[in-house]
Length: 314
Image 1: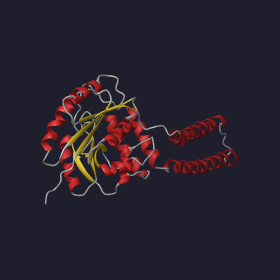
Image 2: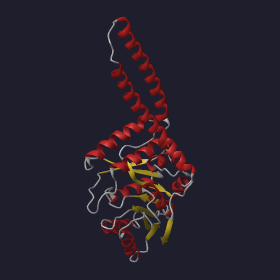
Image 3: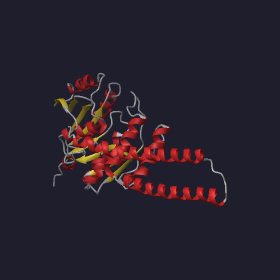
Image 4: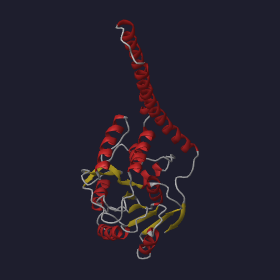
């Protein structure tokens, strides 16, 4: 019995990656050529130009002219990291689709293991980092705290999984049915399939170029993950309101006890200032959380496209 090998598409989102992209493609192509006839039938590299302002597109085209297995999706603007991955996934042509960052900090050699797991019946294979020792202090602390927090809120997630994953074409077609614009792919893919495998790897250092992720981007991505999959923050606000009401009643009773029973003079401005500062701060937090949900609802109701393609080089 002849076993038909699957075809593979590699999706690489790029934003101002002119420095690192040549090195990454030169590392990937020998690997893909090596895997041909062994674990895959053919391969395709889908490069997504996410509104780059440097020479990223020119670098892509130079490699495209040398290798017909490269496909370029040139977006009209920067539509965000998650949308650029989606553009690549939805325009990939082969049976298996792997998304990986342009800097190749996620070990591309692990793709071989992902494909082998697919042959064992897994339509979704997640790349999971062994540790975050090579991340900055802020990114490491934020990520560890964030994963614990979203698990507490009931959001399905895999600790230390980023956007390095293998999906089948059929699974990507199911993903296209999800219309939301505020996308958190790490959570969305886990709603598509409850049977998945994990591949562990050591995250490598970026050799060329600069990371495009900033603390603000991490916080924004984290908020998208929480508000897209959990309403627990709203419920926690309700519980916090009850606690605040009870504390206020206790405080009023305590002050009344001191002034009426103990004849202790309580400075009015002190207690008033503390109460104003406390409740004012809590109210701002509450309004911020509610505002985040309202903003997401507003964004979704406009039904703007996830991305706009200027041209596809195929």
